[in-house]
Amino acid sequence: MAHEPALDLLNYLDAQTTTLTKGTNLFRGPVRAHSTAMPIQSAFVNSFDGRPPDRVLGTATEIRHASVSVIVRSSGFDPGLTLAWTVYTKLQSASPSTGNAYMDVRALQSNPNYLEQDKNLHHFWSLNFEVTYAST
Image 1 (cartoon, one colour):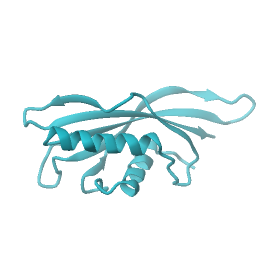
Image 2 (tube, helix red, strand yellow):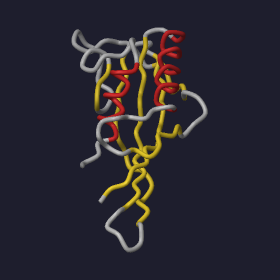
Image 3 (tube, rainbow, N blue to C red):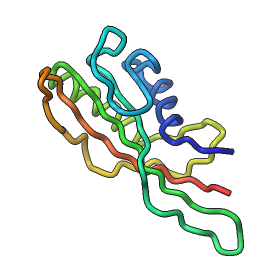
Image 4 (cartoon, rainbow, N blue to C red):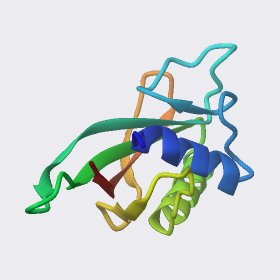
């Protein structure tokens, strides 16, 4: 079965939080500008590289280590930090059950990383996770 770690973690957050809803304030892909269809307080889940796969000798199996980033945007510092910690806590203990056998979801830092305040005074946090799974 194909693995899509960013999509699977997005679906996990959608199911496990009351503050994030897929398609409303939880999106897959890069950060998009605030608009009438894109609220300020939002989270964006996106995949990027990751470590090379580990091969299991004598089999067609590889252990893959996908990297997934979540960017949280908020108009206020405290509400944004609270949302970033919610995302961190949920994904740090995640066990996405999408039919895909994920072995581990591990945070790559100890707490949400504050990035910046943009020209519109929106605050941003970055959270990065390594998602480990077997692939054949």
